[in-house]
Image (cartoon, rainbow, N blue to C red; front, side):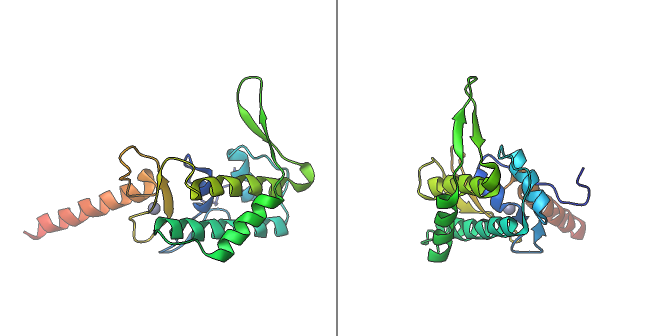
Length: 189
Ligand SMILES: [Zn+2]
């Protein structure tokens, strides 16, 4: 369908699923949202359906993504989020005019204005981020233990001891590296 584009890394936290559209930030960065259409795809996967995205809207999205990354990283390091990032997140939150709609079946969907659907969707993401950055959800901010990743993630595990942003990628890679290192040791002796 979109051959050639890296897959999305989706989790159960909207904010960090969004910041994870750019991974390996501390190594060779992998851009998983390289075009406006990939933003449209990512939004659709997350229940935010927009018909199109202009270059200007795409820039707004990337700007928000980096502001969220900066704010989340600072929070994970027990620092105050940079004022510029906070300003940007608030601006997107204020601009968005999405409506949460409860369906008769008891599900939520987001109604976006067709004329400003991307801005509305970004407002939903910004509001989600404000909620967890403000400590409204049960969990703990941490940085991924992978030295080439270092992504900020929101740990909702009961023990609050999660080490990787994603067990299937960063966690597995580290396990494999450790296994290979041990194999080497065994060969050497
Ligand atoms: Zn990671």
